[in-house]
Length: 449
Image (tube, rainbow, N blue to C red; front, side):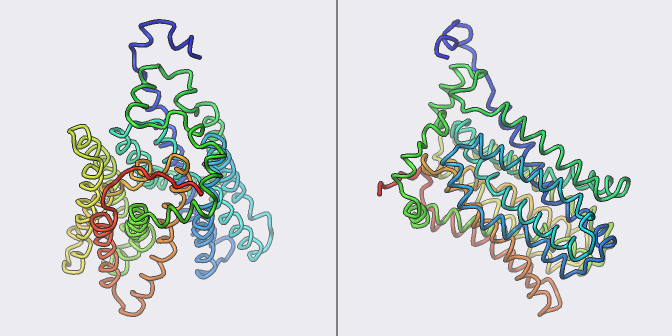
């Protein structure tokens, strides 16, 4: 390998850009990740009509994914650090796609009760299978990108969640209308199985990738990239740090704990938009379901734009000589302050102003959603996967808590005013976490057992 890298001075002088191909691949995979989560939201009405699911049963089926996803984060992080992102991510993509594909066949189970049970089990299994995805993304970005590009790279793969809502929701709705709900699961599951093969073929550590020139490798490594990937986190390194002792070190580190808590607060906004926002438009603003569906795409577009802009802004601050702490905190704090504008919806009656405020809030949330870049910046090299797993576990607890809390607030008051205040307060708590708890942003060094 060394001979091929030194074969010609022309090759040495040229800096390849293989890292962008890797980024494109994880963006596409993450888009499918979120699209597969949303399959039931799109096909749910048709499936309820066919099997006679009531709202309570649908609620349990919807919850299955989040419970498994949260509970599996720590094991997923450990597996990533133990076996590396290439193998674990490939298995993750394969199995979540397989479980998506199998959901097309629940009608073969016969009774509605059996269909409910089968769908619940498959959604639960899919949540567990998807759990390594975002920690793996963070691990790959930490390996393939220098610090001054890591914010943009992380923002791009994180923005795939908005891209999925804009592109795949209409596509899946059309497939359901034209060919039946089964087709959605066949198409999405089949495409995911192909992605797993593509991942295995393309993904390698920068130091091992045949397409990476010495100039690109040096650029990544000199900029803080962990170019040997899994080789930097050997099994004996992880063992020396010590299982639950390692988890305790991560959870008792003030900076990391502040980052984890902030991610929970940020995701309160995410899950409001994913769950209650369309209902808010219908019940509180008197829109039709069709109008609500169209309007709900606007914040997603704004979130995508803000997400990419936040990463570019953060990395540009680094290139201008600002510290990592300043470069990450400025977009996060500024973006979350913009998100507080959601509370303003309680004081206006014009629909277009409401939509504008909601879009501004989600745009701010996109700008401030740099948590995965911070994870790549701060996690111990021996435990990027585990730290990312804890981070993602904290963040997705909001997926369980937020719908329930808002449901109680709406039921008790009969309005969404308290719910919007709840969401806005969590945006402020994110600001508090980064300004007061996190302090300086830097990579954590583990203490041996």
